[in-house]
Length: 315
Figure 1 (cartoon, helix red, strand yellow):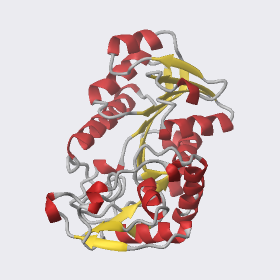
Figure 2 (tube, rainbow, N blue to C red):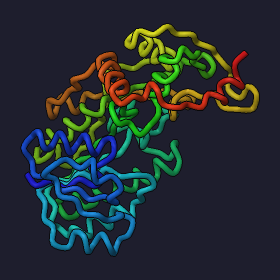
Figure 3 (cartoon, one colour):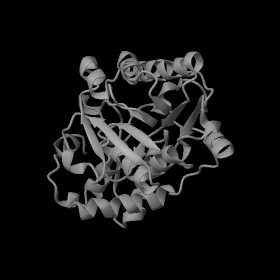
């Protein structure tokens, strides 16, 4: 297949490009051209900011692809998604939109599944992702465009643009205590980036996936404090936990980039297993070990980190 990836040089989209190349696909990427050195050999780049709709139309005017994977960056709106589909004007085959598990109403009981009602629980982020989903689903309904919605959650792994697992690596390798918000009992679920990339690559062009949405993540739910304990065990570093009540001293408790929120986030993966036979390759422990190896190779254990906000909260 000839596959167009919107993105291609950052975290999820770069891993996706690599997975597509391994599967023997021809890959074309469209991005802002900020990291040209990351584009693998043999991949053609169209340089364009997708939010410039006129430039997008010009960049894609002569392109025809068998597959499209839309890895949006914030804040990509529903109008931006419509502009991409208009620019391709029916010259795209199977389209996969990378959404998020946060389109679901997290005030409802867990676990969340593909038919759990969507809501604006997560504010503007959810609003834009829902609008993007709806843009694709309308094309599927009205124009018979083959469309699949993918909803990952807390994607982790090498090159992560979210400072989550690396946040805890930074503290544990330096012998620092880890602050925990309150009891640290809210459940989280993580999916390895390579599992997500391989799932998308495998579903491209598969008729059973057309018109469907899939939760794509790992199988293990774990509490906030359990996540930190698992990381310490995996990387073999001693752990000191300091539980801090949120709001103490007027500052939030630093705990990863986006892991502090006060609700559970647990999702089923039944549908993608049953319909497409796709399951994750990494357990959470194995994925964290692989990510830590990358962290050390990159020398991130020696980078400068500002711990002053945590120091102000320590007893």
